[in-house]
Image 1 (cartoon, rainbow over the protein chains, first blue to last red):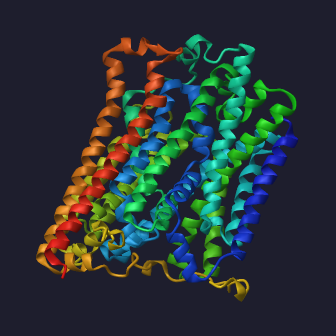
Image 2: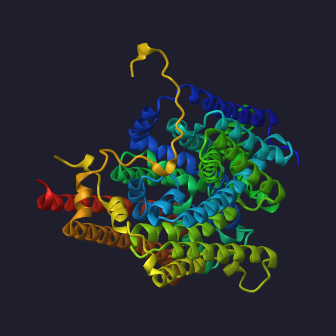
Image 3: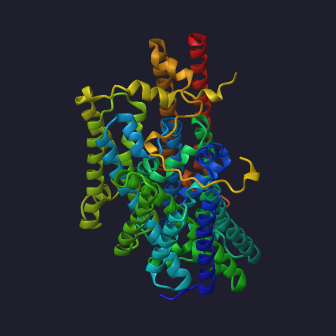
Length: 495
Length: 130
C-alpha cells in the first residue's frame, strides 16, 4: 500500500516523538532523587497534574484513532464507546478510587494479598493482570502498525516494533514512569494534536462554504457500512467499558501518587472533565470523515480517519504540518499507554519471578513488551475500538468482582475470589474465542462476541456463592483492613 | 536538600512493594480507635454502609438516565427527528449531553462522600478523643 501522505512528514513526526520519549527517559534517571524524595514528591503532586497524567496514560490508540474510525463505520452507535470509556472513570470514582488509595497497595495483586491474606489469590490475580495487560498492548501495536503504514508507506510491522523498542529503551534506562510531568504533557499533546487541526479544518470549510454536516445528511444511517448494533450489544458494551476500567493495571498505580483518599477523589473528578473534553474531538473527526474520507471504511482502514482528514482538506505545507501534528499525537498515544502497561506488568512479573530486583525489573519489562509484540505480529488488525472492548469485557469479568467485593463486602474469601476470577476468565475468554471460531453467522453470535452482560454477573455470583460456602475462611484481619480502606486520613482533619 | 551539596546521590527505590509505606502520619489515632473499641467498629461499619449507599444511588441513577436515552428514543421516535444546527437529537444526546451528566454525578458523589467522612470524624472525636 502506498502512503497517501508525504512520507517525510510521517518520518519527522515519528522520530521527534520517539526521540523525546527516550531522551526524557534517560534524563529522568539523572534527576531522580533519594528514596525519601521519590515518595514525598510523588505524594505532593497536585490533582491537576495527576489528573492530566492519568488522562495521558489512559487515552490510547482506541480513543485517539478508534472512536473516529468507528463513527465512520457505524454512526451514532459508535458514540457509546467514548461514553463507556469516560463513565468507567465514574465507576472508578464511586467504588474504588479513595479506598484503593488508602489501601497502600501499588498493584492489584498487592491489594488482593493484603485483603485476603492469601498467596494463592495473589498468584491468580498476577496471572490475570498480566494477561489483561498483554491483551491491551496488542491493539496499541496494531494502531502503531496502521499509523506507520499510512504515514510513511513502510510495512506495518515496523510500527509495532518501533513502539516496543522505544518503550523498552525508555523503561529500561530509567522509566518515564516516575515522571508525572511527562504523562501530563502527553495528555495535552494528544488534545492539541486533535484540537488544532480540527479548528483549522472547520475554519477552512466554513470559509469555502464546503459542507460541515451536509445539511444533516452526514448523520443518516444509510452512510453506515457496518450493521446496526442491537440493544443487547450496546448495553453489554457499556457494561464492559464501565466495569472494565476498574481493573486496568496501569490505571490503578497512578492513584498512588495522590496524597490521600479525598484527593484521589478530586483527581478522578478532574480526569472526568479532561476525558469529556477530549472525546468531543475524535467525534468531530468521525463526523467530518463521513463526508471527506468515506473511502476508508470500504478498504478497512477506517481507523486512519483522524490521520488522513487534515490532508484531504488542506494541500501542501499546511496539510503536511497538520498531518504531522495528528501523527505525533497518535504515536504519543501508543507510546504512553504501552509504556504505562509495560511498567505495571514489569512490576507484577518481577515481584512474582525475580524477587523484585532492579535487574529483574528490566528483564521483566522486556518480557512484558516482547510477548504482546509477537501476538500483535501474529494477528490481524481488528477495528481498534472493537478489540479493546473485548479486553474491557475480560477485565470486568475477572478483576472487577475481586476489587468491588474486596472493598465493600466483609464476606469475601480467598477461595471465593479465586473461583470467581477463574470462572469469569473461562466464561468470557471462552466466549470471545468461540465467537472468533464460529464466525458472525453462528447463532447467538452477539452473546458470544460481546459477553460482558452475562459473564460479569456470573463472575460476581460465583464469587459470592463460593465465599458464602467457605465462610470459615474469612480472614481475621477483615475489620482492620476495611477500617483502613474507608476511614478518612487525619492529616486532612480541620483542627 | 541543599543545592550546595552538588547533585543529589542517586538512589534506586527497590523496596518490595507489598510493604508499601502506610498513609502519611503513620498510624492515625482515628483508625486505632475505630479498630479497638466496639463502638469504633460500629462507627466504621456505618461509615462503610453510608458510603456504599451513596455510591450505589449515584451509580444506579446514572445508569437509569443512560439507559433511558435509547429507550426514550425508541418510545418517542419523534424526538429523533428533532435537530439543532442540523445535528439530530440522538447524536447531540449521546455525543454531547452525556458528559455533563457524568461530571455532575461525579461532583455530587464527591460532595456526599466528603460529608459522610466529616460526620464520621465528628462522631469519633466526640466519642473517643481525650
